[in-house]
Each structure stands twice: as structure tokens, then as C-alpha cells.
Image 1 (tube, rainbow, N blue to C red):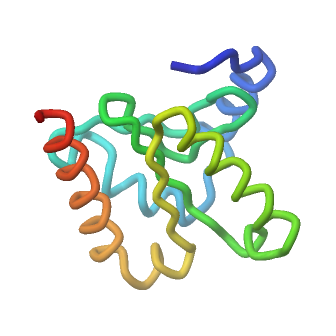
Image 2 (cartoon, one colour; image 1 turned 180 degrees about the vertical axis):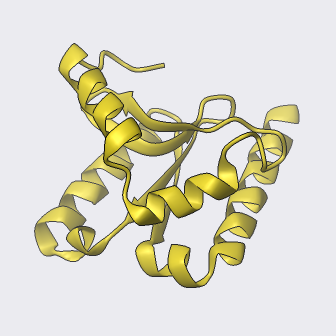
Amino acid sequence: MHQDASPQLFEKAKLLRYQKMTRHELILWEHINRKQILGQRFRRQHPISNYILDFFSLSYRLCIEVDGKSHMDEINIERDKIRTEYLISNGIKVLRFTNEEIENQIDKVVEQINLNLLNLMHAGAQ
């Protein structure tokens, strides 16, 4: 599920995945990789259309974004809004966490991810 992501975007995602993940992305990755949450696999730096999602559960179409300070200015707030609307319109649920939440409340972040996955699992079972 990449929705026509370009070869260039795949290369950029690969670079981000293996060389340029932020410290806060790495902290979260340590809590969600290796199927630690409800046995679900997350992909990191997953390309979809013109976007690279920080983390993505393909099974439950759940995107997790880690927002640093660059996401707090007006231009990026609007870009994130457009991106989120696009993802939602394509059946993808989006969770956003700030660097501060990752840094200071990682247990709450993991709990939120767990609750959202449970909800998505139950919705899919019905």
C-alpha cells in the first residue's frame, strides 16, 4: 500500500529509516517495533502517495506521526492538516504525538496507541 509513491520518495524514506530518524522517533520505535503492541507490526518511514509516514500499521491502517518543533509553525500546521485530511480520506487513522510527549510521557503514548489499535481491531471484527 503505497498509493503511487515515486521511486525518489522510496529512496528518501530509506535514507530517513536507516540514517536520519530523529531521537524521538527512535524512542518511540523502541516501544513499538518487534510487535510489542498487541502483536502488531509497524513499518517506519512508510511512503504513501507524496508523504512519508513516521510509523504505519498496514493491518489496521494506523499512522503514527511524531511532531517536533518544525511542525508548530503556521505553514507546517497547514501542511499537516492537509496531509491528515488526505490520509483520513484514504481510510487511514492518524495519531500525532509531540516530541515532548514522547520524551516525558512515553507510557501514555504507548497506552494511546494500544487503545487505538484495540478499537480498530474491534471495529474490524464486527
